[in-house]
Amino acid sequence: MFSKNHIIALRISMFYAAYFAMVGVALPFFPVWLSSSGLTPENIGVIIGCSTFVRVFFDPVVAQLADKWGSRQPIIILLVAFSLVFFSLYFITNTFWTILFVTILYSSCCGATQPLAESLTMLAAKSAQFEYGRVRLWGSLTFILAAIIAGDILVDNSSDIILLMIFGTICFLLIVTIFLPNIKSSIAVSVRFPIVPLLRDKPFTLVLIAAALIQSSHAVYYGFGTIHWQKAGISEVVIGLLWAEGVISEVVVFVFGGIILRNIGPVRLIFLGGLAGILRWIGTGLDDNLIILFILQILHGFTFGATHLGIIYYISNNVSESFSATAMSLYAAVGGLAMGLMVIASGQIYAVLGGQAYFVVAIVSAFGCMLCLYSATYRT
Image (cartoon, rainbow, N blue to C red; front, side):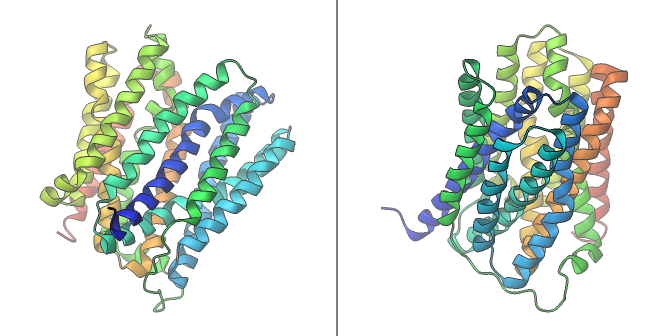
């Protein structure tokens, strides 16, 4: 017999499953559709980059509205509904400028749902007494499943099927979103713009930037990991296993993250993610030996999973719930900006250094560790 708290956790788990099923199709395969539409690599880079940068401006605006109203779920429903409408415009676009325009509209709405959902999840976790990682892991699992299924479907079909698959996952997301719990938070009435006191909070700003840097250190891996391993003679099947291993290790950290957090705290967990990043990227840049790579891929659970858990719980523990949506959106915005810049830079760096480009992002991860240590001088 499920209790009320179990039902709340299940409903939020379904949201993560639906959201990351969409991401699992879009992230690997949307660029394939763009290419099949006649766009050049430069055009594709601009479109993908804009889909990231638009969140820097739009996410905090939406989140401040949520904090001022003390509600998240109705706004999430509205954003997903608009996302569905805007995404449908891809079916009638065929030029760079129209696709870019639709991408800006779609990404501004779809991207803004995630920080609101994270804020809602942490509010629910406190009231329903469940661990964030235990519901978030379903997103990682469906990401793997969706990517595998979409890849299999694409083998015998036109690339136009990609749009239909993404559209279908957004429809599913809209249905699931309707059943999210509508948990209210206290309303941010003391200030006109909740973002202002957050940016004045030095420890919060330092930890936020630290997490963003550590996450952005994945840029070379996300952008050129597969290409680099192909050049090293590693088969596509093995490369797929390496990627899957990374996500599985992430799931394991989400399962046991609560235990780790209780022992070391959020900032130290982010610091641990940064240390893992230094080791992982240096090792990946030094050697393409498969045994070493399979060992290093285990660290993805820390470089991504531990860093993400750390910042989510840091915000939950140190930011008033009336500012929580704005804080989550700032993390998404700063992280998106850092990742976008690093992805652009990594193209130039990889062109010059090849696999040694991983050494550069190891330095970025080290800077994240340093900021974690510096933040401790303000707050323990």
